[in-house]
Image (cartoon, rainbow, N blue to C red; front, top):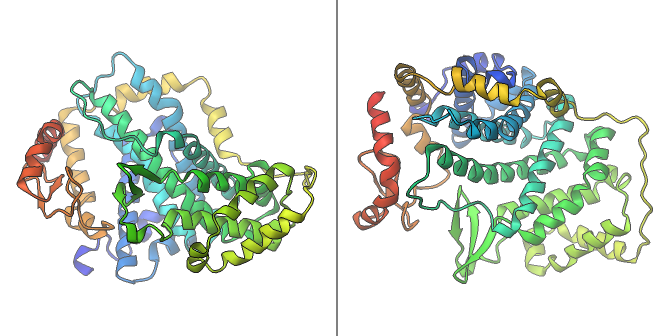
Length: 439
């Protein structure tokens, strides 16, 4: 992977050392954009390192320099910006941007950070998050609650063709689709946190088991499986950023996301530390016993450890439910969300207007300069190297080998599919090609 290295030796160390938290008012600013680009480089380098089996230097640097709490704070800050400022920005009458990519970068920032945190927590280093692990647990709970709530809509929104959509309306659709994928990443992060359940603080355990009752929420996720759906009688699963049809022979196989839920449940229900603190009320007992219907022989063949969970549920069915209780008198609570909300309360419109004037209305020269920076960050050869799978046709989803020659962004399996897709793709192809020439 030497030819594809993004960061020279020592450069990653400098980028990690420079990571810091930004106020909501500065999101999208020059300094913030530089940090976003640095995070993207760290993300891609981490993937390249894993692909080349070169260890995990990026993860080690983040832990060594104590930057995991900074990532968590930035994650929650951009989540709050998307909830509190972005909607106000979209409603401003004098906001008609010709190019929405600067705003897209802020919207995409959350996905970049949660992806990097997923890499860090995969290595079971929860202690590196220090007290912010409480904030991260709350963040994951918010995302998974939204995931359960949207089950009736069968997953993320489809990309619908629209003849009259404004750039901001298109951006809002992209943000909604991205929110679904972020929630799936949050599920992975939560599962990795549960891997460390025996070493978590009492406050964190109480937050997971009592305040949020995560075992019952995970049961809801298994029941509704928002990453699976039936279309035209065929089973589809959301994998690799798109809905993919599952062949009949592959359907009995456990999906990665279902596996994450089962492992998290195993950790939360069978860990001695968690068992000592989880109150099995009548409601919790009823929810957990629903799991017995899912514990088939096929599932146990794939995850043999779940036989222990099956035995736990058999004993639970015979046990009397416990009355609600609260063990902790003094309990540590998350601080980041409440502090940011307190600092910015009543200022959401003022922040939106400031960013409209100073951040999201760049001149043509500013856009050209930024385009050159984006080109350096998102190198095409590296993006193809870190892609989880080969590209798929934008029209029929078959494996593709031909790319749109004008914008270089969409893939097709044949000329016929490209022609059929042009009515939709043409709206974004011409502006994208013009933007590339501006670089």
